[in-house]
Image 1: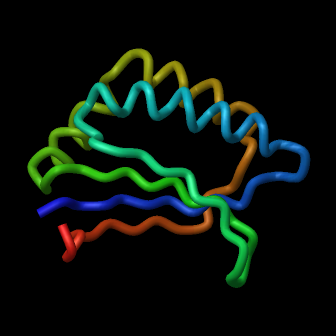
Image 2 (image 1 turned 180 degrees about the horizontal axis):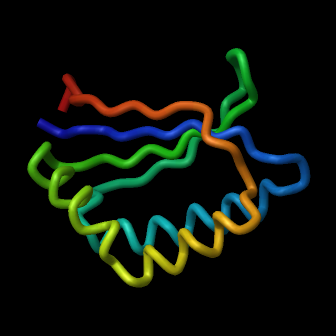
Length: 102
């Protein structure tokens, strides 16, 4: 059964283009580590106008391997150092669960 990991972000004013570019770069790295699909969803309703970054994995085992491999990927480590220096968004929430319809 597929699993989905989401992170909701509150994007700083004037930083939407930068945030989307960062998501594109992150997705290229993450796909090498087993992510099957990635979605960036702009919220139109809810308590905050957030963007949600969703990663779909074919199964829990692939997600586990992803979690083990990302912290030691040199390109990911360098990417995270760069975006952490001047963040374009603040993390609002994260979730992880099974896709019951897959």
